[in-house]
Amino acid sequence: MTEQNLRIIEVKTLQNAREEISKIGSDPESIEIMAPKAILKVIKLENVVLQDAIIIKQDMLSIGGEVAVPKNTFELHEKTGDILIIGNLKQLKELVIKLKRHYSRLKNIANKLDILLREVN
Image (cartoon, rainbow, N blue to C red):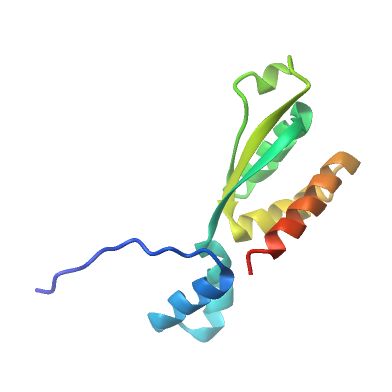
């Protein structure tokens, strides 16, 4: 019987993900599909209108990601707060598309997120 070895590898960029997936002999056509799923990012968004935070959370949950919000977000006692958007690159790019369908404040967040995600390559 063979013994398995486990180790955690750091995958920080799309190029790095492509290389790691290629190293194990995956089908070259599948690499572009899998690479964006291999990179988890946590993005801090500061001073978000809490109404927007709720929509961002709902949109991200619908695509399998997560958004950490302040504990009283749903009570809307505070006007703004900081949130953490948690997801892989594929999910984050889908979030950009979803947010661009909303009103101008969320479209603005989508545009900023889109610019930030371009830096990951």
